[in-house]
Image 1: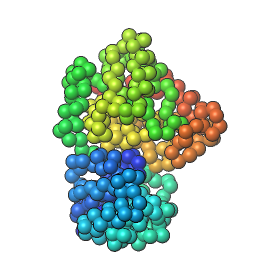
Image 2: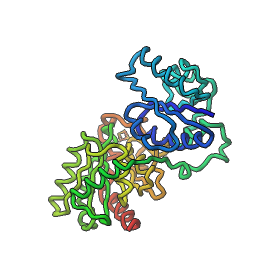
Image 3: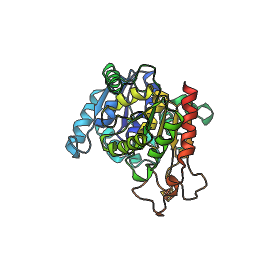
Image 4: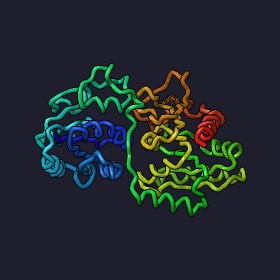
Length: 345
Ligand code: SF4
């Protein structure tokens, strides 16, 4: 059996698609259609036969690009396309390639699918995606913890991490705590990572803090670094913009714990089984995107009736007070990070 998996959504969605890909790979070749950014994260993955890059916003924009990518998809000889992303555009891609498709009954492109699977709001997204490969009875569905995603950093990713840590004076056994203060969505960015870092320095003076994220997160890393300097703590390692996605995954595999917002690093940590302290504000784990590392803690203001207020978290709090994030106490987060760090030592 040859399968195609179409996933052109956000990075976190791509990572959560890997259990489905692994499941399909047990029965034959799996070819994945992915955005350029998501394609990079699948490098070295043993369950992926090939990645077809679909640069839907630039190189492959428009109908000409769609037909070009459809021709590549047709060349794989896939017999089923699993629609992990539900737009009409990816549905049209499968239809143009002549590959029968299976996708969620709520997706925008469902009119073009050959078969529909119920989109279960009450399931983790890894379960929802896994269920595309069949329509299992709920009793036979693996628990979220059994559907931990998988990534495979390569030798060069490991080498970059080792060079970064060596340059910062980190020894082989030195404990590391990762902080991921960024998010594409402003209301998802917890504003107190600097206060958290200050608290960690006094409670865990031997531990080094490393900040991960995109290049645009450098100002957040600088604020954390400044707070630690003021406390006289050991220098913060700023890895923002310095590592590939798989490099960040490799770094996380080396960390005792990650403190993160509801954003891509959370899913990288799930894939590397790095203990995770996740901070949820305008979104909630019940939406299906909670951490899957064996050891994880979710912190959020459960009593706020306005949560969740959007699917992704917006650019500004619609109520103006942003209590879902402002009211998460740095001391409470620090207590969980310290606990997980000690448990990892
Ligand atoms: S409306 Fe509520 S959940 Fe949404 S951003 Fe504001 S405080 Fe957070």
